[in-house]
Image (cartoon, rainbow, N blue to C red):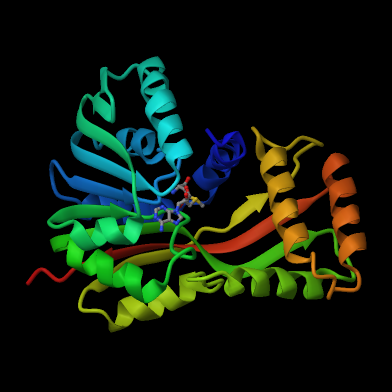
Length: 283
Ligand SMILES: C[S@@+](CC[C@H](N)C(=O)[O-])C[C@H]1O[C@@H](n2cnc3c(N)ncnc32)[C@H](O)[C@@H]1O
């Protein structure tokens, strides 16, 4: 099991909770059919399941797919115990189980290949995922997998603004280098949010709702909430890796200053993101 990856994903959970738009969630819940067939692509540690239950979705089927076997193993291990502790009626089997009347499976697999093979899905969830794969392939997969009138909910979709405070003279150069490094990875798009909005406009279905869902991570009275200091440490590690080629003159100083500010509980981090809700044509 990749502990680093699972701790990172679990650490962002409290941040996601604060960031997601209640308005987009309410629109989703008002449009969702009864006993929905749900497919969660890039499901990570499976945190969508407790969220669906909190929102009152406790019937139907949920299938979570992720390319990383370690996070799937973690989801199968950890989620049932968490849900039992929260008072739900849970049964388990090798690949998942049931929670109340919701049948749950977690699988290792490729998201795009899964979408290509899936059909008649009522709800596709792709949280913090759309910036990792080519937008056109993701949308084509969503369109082919959704049932007529089915929904795709894409919360926490990155849209290319990374802000750190207090100001540092290297900020602009560091942000540019960080985003260029992300864009250079195959299939990735640092402006996935805005490009998805435009792709949805050109598609046959309808963008039912959208809202900003920026991550805002800041210390309050000298304390970072939950495990968010660890999450921010990971983000600084990603930025440091992007700066490794040394093209940003102030890069080393920037990273050292940010680590010092994190240790002193003085560092604030913001990432600009959107929550999107798309509906397939009714036909
Ligand atoms: C940023 S994480 C988000 C996880 C989860 N949706 C969440 O918000 O906590 C992205 C996840 O997508 C998975 N992933 C990336 N590319 C994938 C692909 N092509 N197929 C399946 N999973 C993929 C990664 O393993 C990772 O768990």
